[in-house]
Amino acid sequence: MPQPNLIHPVKIVLEIIDRDDSVFDPYAREPVGQVVREGESPESGEQITIKAQISYYYSGARKDAPRWERAGVVEESIGYVSMRYKDMVRVGLLTLTPAGDFDVFRLKRGDRIVKLGKETVDFYIAGFKPFAHYPGKLMQTMLEADFTDRHPGYQQGDL
Image (cartoon, rainbow, N blue to C red; front, side, top):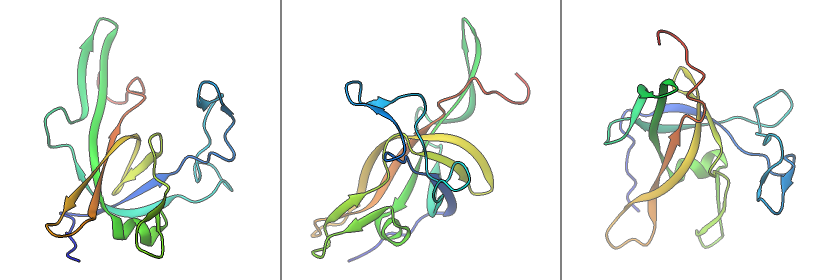
């Protein structure tokens, strides 16, 4: 099957939500207190490194862009990373059935991106869009993972 190439790929580092060690409220379907993520503290699992294509270049995307509100200036970042499914399988973010269908998909909304290339960031996965469907093939080959800055109040530098 044809496989697309990433444009200007860089390594990104992810911290995956550890649902087994997080205390969840079954009625609210959310963590009580703070969710635990693998790799965010020593002895808490792995940080996953994968090559991805990063984009801030579309309508609505921004990197540390100021927005003026009544309470003051808010800097926020919104963008996406594109990953190939074959790379996700290689690093353990996706497992396949013997027939080649998707089985376990570990990446989910709320997982954290802590590095984009050499830059340390604090972004969170907000949603997904599969793409790169080739004609005559019944499987997408890439995934767009949208991310956002959940803590725009943690501003640094000139305000």
